[in-house]
Amino acid sequence: MTRVFILGIFSSLFLGGFCYWLAAAPSSIAPVPEQMTAARMAELQKVIRPCEGEDAFDKIAWLTTIHEARVKAAKEGKPILLWEMDGHPLGCG
Amino acid sequence: MTRADFVPVCTDDWYTRRRKDSEGDFFRKVADQSPRKGLNGGTRQGIYVFTADGELLGYKNHGGDAEVMKKVFLDAKAKFDKLPESRRKPSGVTVPAAGKPDANFNRILPEDGIVLKVHGRILEAKAETFVKGTCDFTGGDQASRDYCWITADEKKSLIPPKAEVGFCYALPEKIAQRLARFHLIDNTRGEPEFWKKEHVVANKITLTVTAVKDDAIELRLDGEVKLEAGPKLGFEPKLRGNLRYIPSKKAFDQFDIVALGDYRGETTYTPGSREGRKPFGISIGLADLTKPSERIAPQGVRDRDPYLGRD
Image (cartoon, rainbow over all chains, first blue to last red; front, side, top):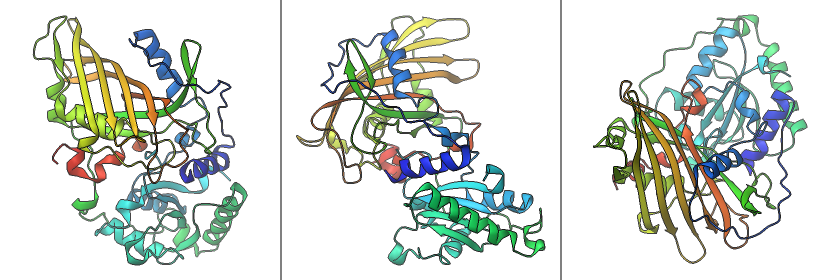
């Protein structure tokens, strides 16, 4: 939950927008298909993967080591913004 | 505020706070200036703003709202702007070369292997298909994100021993176990506990050659997996995938897999699951390694031996 919240903050502060999908489907137990056809697979990929705007934080050019960030920050004369989390912010859920 | 004001970086505190190398030493030097001193080796997670030579300018633990975070960033930037020009001008600070990384807390991308991007999402049945699910947990309806690493040797083991349409063979054991234990998991609400070996009740995944062309071998992946950690925690997905191997490049240029099944339960750090058995989907595809963010380690590889099938 923390990651989702922080992602929202970074996205809104850095990118000025954040997309939340609100599906209107009724809750029910799913019948798992006997056969997953190629067409169904393509359809599911589209549903499961992040929708437009959902991964807005991904548009930020995050570096992934502090050393790389220090080198870049020193070269460009900027401060470093470190997002430090138990579980990588870009890939733990 | 714009992206141009800062150099943004993310790291996994589980590694960084433990590293006994220049990366870890520098981070601890910065973190020690904050309230987050990591007593007894505890977490140091949070948002830090600091200079390239290690002066902390701002800190906020996770929490608060966007306006609070914005103020932290603006205050930190104001502090930076008041530093002597010699420390904030381009190339004003010299950063020493990175030392040898601590092998215990550094994970290296498998050279010449395969990196897959893995997304999971809660789903709901609607008519004959599935749509994005909804839940009460804030953000729990969004896609999760992780990476799966396959080593160079494991990649070789994926190549069909017989390039003949209809030839069917088992997905190599190590890869099948890795997928089941570390990637067929609901991580949409936080860090999950991974499946243990004994939780893998069934794991039958096969590859079938569907086409042999001059420059490509196409494969279909089919699978059924049953994961169970007691009556209240389990997942029973079916898998379907399309893979394409390019012999001239010794590489796969397609590696798409979808897993779909009913999921039940939650673990310590993934509370807020939906009641009962609910549909859950996982989509796997090749990562874009030109992006640093897609070269990060899979969550499961913290415990290297189980992840690599050495347990």
